[in-house]
Image (tube, rainbow, N blue to C red):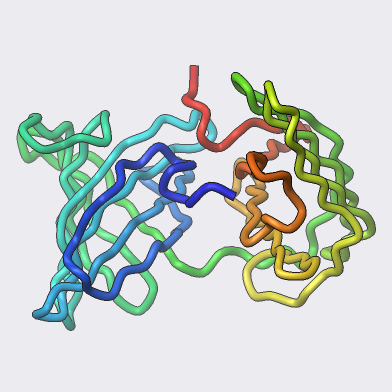
Length: 241
């Protein structure tokens, strides 16, 4: 699987050798559901340097952000722009708030400093104990194609299969016969070292795979998918039209 930051179209960031992590948070910006993905690198003073993006659902409009989070009280300010490269470009907005205890909330401001809408994100995803669905869908772009099928009944995974192919070499991933694992805030399946998670984003369910090289050819991978309420799939990295 490609690194998560590359899948979401983020730039490679070269920070000093400090503790770093990638965080996913789900929440709302105004009345719209949203997914926030942040790469966080800790500074020597205990604060954090942040860069990432959030996706507005269901339209999947992307907004890229970068900024800082203070130590202890977690005061956070993120400049916002339409492209991953924000340096030297005027911001289209700014998120100002506090990020502590697994929650990031505050106000989004326009480029002139006017209040636009409140936002709130959480590192805790909704439980999926009551989730039921039968999904069989395909998605692709360029050289990559993916097919996913699964059946879930009240949070119990009855069947699951995920395949992908990368042209022109025809390298494939084939994942099946995974066993369900109990997790908080979603559904998880494991097959050897490979782990697949399903997360409820409100407008979509997100399927993502980690450490699945053993199920894939040398040039193949499993890109995250978004499944809508009708059971249709699209690649997470694809830009909204």
